[in-house]
Every structure is written in C-alpha cells, then in structure tokens.
Length: 106
Image (cartoon, rainbow, N blue to C red):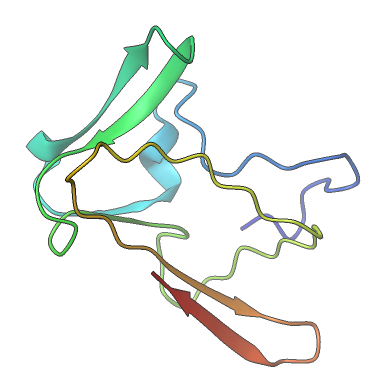
C-alpha cells in the first residue's frame, strides 16, 4: 500500500480523516451509521467517530487481508481519544524485515 511511496521524511500519515474520502483505502466493518468523520474544535481537525461495541465496529488498514502496508519507519504513533467508560480494543500485526510476525493486542 505504501511500499512504493516516499517514506524518507520524518513521518508518513496513514490514518488521517482529511480529504474527500479518507476511508477509501480502509475496510470498515460494522454499520456505516455508527462510523463517521466530524470536525473536532478541540483538536482543530477532522476526526473519526466510532460508536457502539468495539467487537462489531472496526476499521482495518489495509482494506485487503493479503495486502501489506509496506511501512519502513522506525516509530508508530497513534493518537486516540477514548471517553471514560467506553470499551476499546486494538490489534496491530507486523512483519519484520527478517520475516518475523509480531502481534500486539490490547
């Protein structure tokens, strides 16, 4: 997905709510009525809002399971706001350059 794109800068933004159709490259699981983007005055930018259960409403990147992102950056930074009392889960899978598969769930 990003394998052939320039990654020589300080960062590569892969999960942005900016633009006309930012979710076109993602697989959105769950009802479309509970996943949307809106402008947040506090962060002064568009954000994604997912309501309901984290068991049924999910966003997957890349869209196809067999496709890879192809990122070669040293760090991964996620900015996530989770309201108090809301359930949240995340799963990150990555393949190292030595073909070692690593999984992080929270």
